[in-house]
Image 1 (cartoon, rainbow, N blue to C red):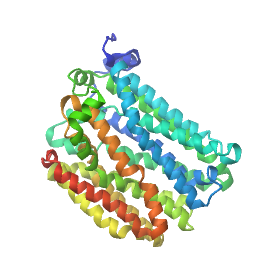
Image 2 (cartoon, rainbow, N blue to C red):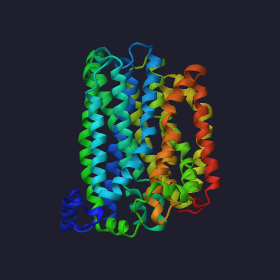
Image 3 (cartoon, rainbow, N blue to C red):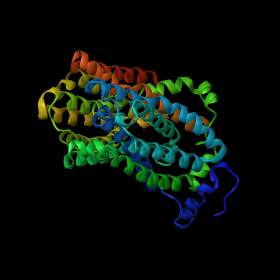
Image 4 (cartoon, helix red, strand yellow):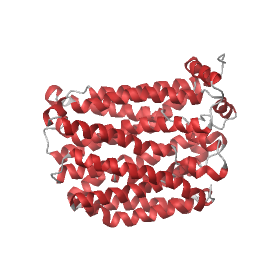
Length: 441
């Protein structure tokens, strides 16, 4: 297969194109697999850092403060990636327009993997002093920039290549990467915390999941390059259905849609951290439970989340995405009023919290990708969806662990539900304003 002069067929994609030529055209099912692999790798990186923010960094990086303050500091650095992510989108959209999708993805995923591996080699405060925190912050910013560049439009490609009556089903496929990534990350940390002494774990055991992340990113890179070199992807690119438009032009023309699209999934995005990162920090700080026990509970919850995400696709195609998101947001609002207190009710309460939380998360989060791109058409779809996703994660999730833990430490667990309630109310308001989602598609 001969490379052409178009930006989307640079030399970096030629090998992937040859594979496609030898194995016929890539199907929707193969696109779906590529999407799941890509999202799983991103969320695995995300959860590896999140878990270390609770179990490792307060002791390794912030030993000069108490455990709670150290965890709050860690969550402050955790939020840096979400602040940097829109900057990454702007930077890499320019690279996309100039050098092609393959070049963009390669740089972004190697930056993501490199930053993650670098955290695995991070020295502690005892070795380099305050530079440990500075380096961790810089690596976290690099992760955020890379995540902004990792947007590939594959979710939009998938949505454009499926029957109209199956859009809900295919919209949930990218979201499977979140619970799958959590299961792998939690499983690795559970294994190391259970088999190593506390000294060995804090010395070297926690580093291995960060090394694994780089290997997973390499696999994800090739899976995604195989998709972006397909004829279907190239045709959509050429027709501007997946063309990276200038950011300022997109914001000027689609600003209202971007804001509404960012607020529509806030209930699920806030819920996302309330059942993954925050409860681990609360249990680790305020109970005597071993971390591996709660990580196993998170594994169970993530499995339920997978089932709920799959169910969201089935339900969305039958009752409508807007209705499902509205009902889920209302249920999350109810959940926020009583469920956080379950974390103080022992192991049984923790299990009930995680099971209910992941069930609601799956139903709402499973269709959140549909809210990101459903209102964009033509030239604005690719860039608009990327910017909307960045804004939604920043507002709905970036500061969630920090806010929830701070409120809970000051006013009790019930206070953390206020943050979750605000996300649910924002979703209900956004859905009311979003006319496009009124259709069942």
